[in-house]
Length: 320
Image (tube, rainbow, N blue to C red; front, side, top):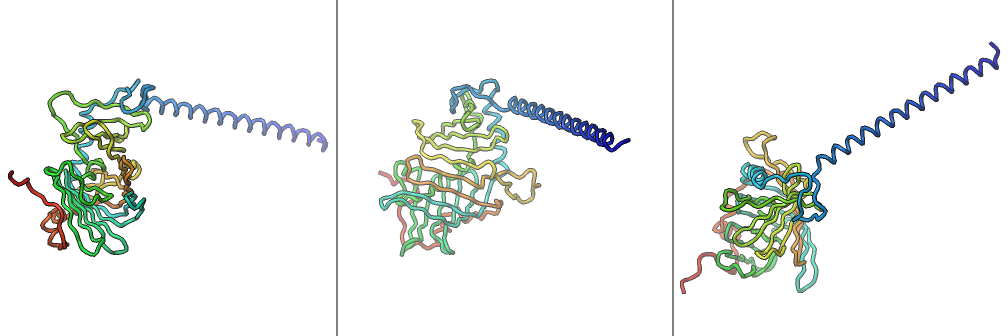
């Protein structure tokens, strides 16, 4: 075979090789595109589709909403396995008062004992600034920031229409609800609340009317974990709302339980006062059930912190 003939045959083989390779790449690309289309269609079929109206009051279109009882059962089961929580982290405070706008980052230790007790130790650079707490009917704050230590008391049963003498950016009696830790009532007389779909936030929404306020919760469709909570007045005006980062739920280390059964707790929560007076970002880590009962006892607080002055008081109103 001459050199010219050899080169021609080589070029033909080479050309055929590259043509075959190109065809193979085209086939792979087409197969990949087809698989992506199937995956997208499958995803679309399993994603709830709301009516065009959207919003918390919108319908659910082609997908039936879970019943209120289903959402309540999942939510309350998580809380039944999380009776106490302790976590440490930081808090970003933003508030506005007569002196203008303020911002401060503080270190915080938080304790919850469900259903209604809270405690928070707030400080900066190793110095305690505030101790806040609440139970079902009372709220207190110990202020260490001035020359004298002052204990402020607020009795919700008696002072329902009175604000705290000093309103802290963090209101401890709201934390249980705003962290999505309030139980959903079940077995009440009358029809149960309906779950609706919010297409904007992609969440199931449940609104519960309580004795003195209305609570609206937004649940992630897959996990049924709360991702937003709104506290409303009886006439449905939003007073405060919180955003709970779904990606920042962590398992609570509960003694005597296996990891898979440990309940999940939100470790990144943004709280906003609807009137623009302030906001709070809470970022904590490593939640456990290590809680000391004395932190919720007012007698211990008075003894441990020995306030120079007490404003307000707890207990029933005096007889007229």
